[in-house]
Length: 404
Image 1 (spheres, helix red, strand yellow):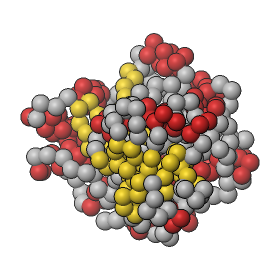
Image 2 (spheres, one colour):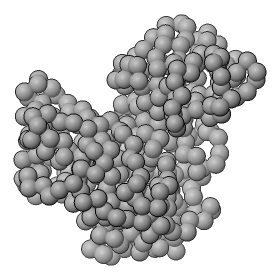
Image 3 (tube, helix red, strand yellow):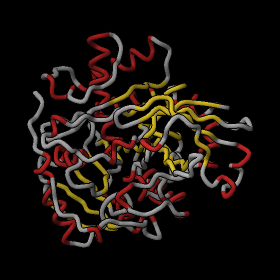
């Protein structure tokens, strides 16, 4: 049954001055709130190494933010901003980034009503090193309700990934209320980012340096990666009064066969699983429902928003994950690729994740709902403590580690 949850119950006062507009000089100097057995303690982020159990399996999201904001100009002089969300033709991320000459993306377009049928040219190309020779153009293919399909074309034989690197800007969150600056090129990216595709950073990982990662491995923590490309929907507030009326966005994820086997082994041994970031949580918890599809239908399908609440599930988590491995082996695959729309709200049954590392999120957001579900509704006491004790909020803000 879909839970009846009012989003106003997940509001809290967030003063503008508590939003971190810039990162700290060092990633691991941020504050760290620890919530364990109902008790709240305060640390510095580098202390996280001592808080993670020696035998834990720790999962990171190694997606990489792409410079997905492009500024174009009409022949009339009007400026049009295009924010690339995900590829359409070709739809595969790696193929889209490897495209030469043209590709089509689903985008959010600013001032789209001012864009008629004309071809747009890149704004201020002469100021961007290498942009003039590309002659990047944008054509409006189809206008949809909130997004548009845009065909990009360019000269010079460069792959589209390089075109974005030359012509685009890092899409920092809109609530920072500032333009992208040089510091964002480095700091709005995790140190372990690897697979291009996100338009927003998995911000819980922004605090880690190689020092913490090396120290975790040295004490016996097994660090592994999944990949979920974060969409612009992560910035969208819940506009409806009832959460049941909020449509979740689709995000693609990839988990290797080897990691699936490692998670199964971890479950069998009873060791804790730590997810770094809500994107890792959504990826890992989506696996159970993908496995159920493999058991019941022989193949996976997109994980629907309300799948976890449709009915009671009797399959064990290990049984479900093994069904995915069987599906991969039957089809000669080394990686499991699927998309998810899963929403995690109070009443959700966590099947894989024991501990979450996460930042402090916007009021009335789906991420607050996820935190509340994880701490059995105790989110407000956690956030009150953070507000009363000088913690910095949102993407460049401080962090927390939550034990279930």
